Image 1: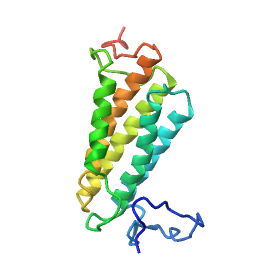
Image 2: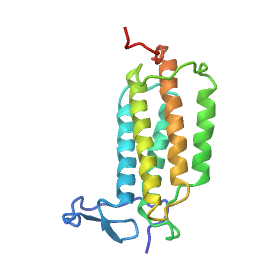
Image 3: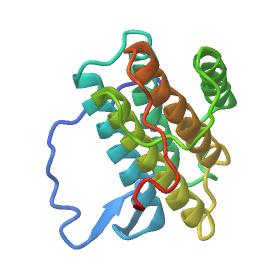
Length: 194
């Protein structure tokens, strides 16, 4: 019987030896190669979650912390959605309300930022640089999800969520610099010539 949506996972043993031959189990119990596109995609979602964890382990402006913590939890839903074939019902899926919250966060944090007049260089504060790194990992997760979707039917909102999340991470990186009163590093055309 499948676990209830809000029931936590209970792990009694971390190693199983089941993957020693290069295969792993999807959320429905089916076995696939560890090179399967879904495994690549949710592995990168896991990497993204770890990158956000590094940001949260450091000095991050208080206004950003609850949003990043919520996103970390949502990324488990994203990974669960990727790990269960789309035709299996009653499993964790990315929901439109999750995408809507990301859009609301984008609008809220972007409202206080100065208008962009140049490309932003990843950097500034440590928090901003870390969020920019998470943004680039998020873009890779989105690409891997889209690639996997050309072979296997995936939940329709996974790539949408990741696309919107990468937008939010860009805005949060800019916000981290602004809230710390740190100048935003901007691209200067021709700066390397001379």
